[in-house]
Image (cartoon, rainbow, N blue to C red; front, side, top):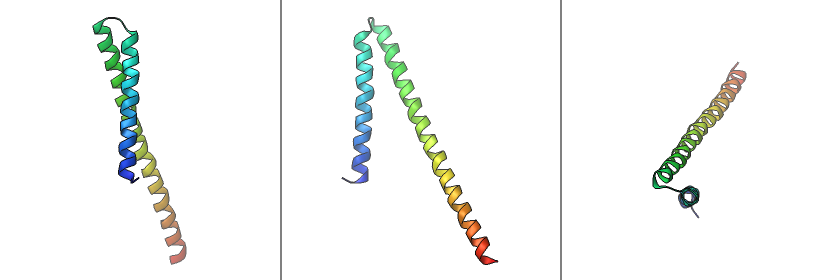
Length: 81
């Protein structure tokens, strides 16, 4: 499997899990308006969690990049003198 196929499979699995959670909550909730509110809350929390993961990933990558670039600067300064 290529990286894009694995990523696509993970995205499909996440969508399925979120839909399953929303469906379970809808089955246990009475009233149409309550079902809409519960589904909306699940969707909003899921999207907020995905946004959190997205930006946290970028912070980690930026930190790793800063660490590596600092190491190269130290090595360059050490050996150039």
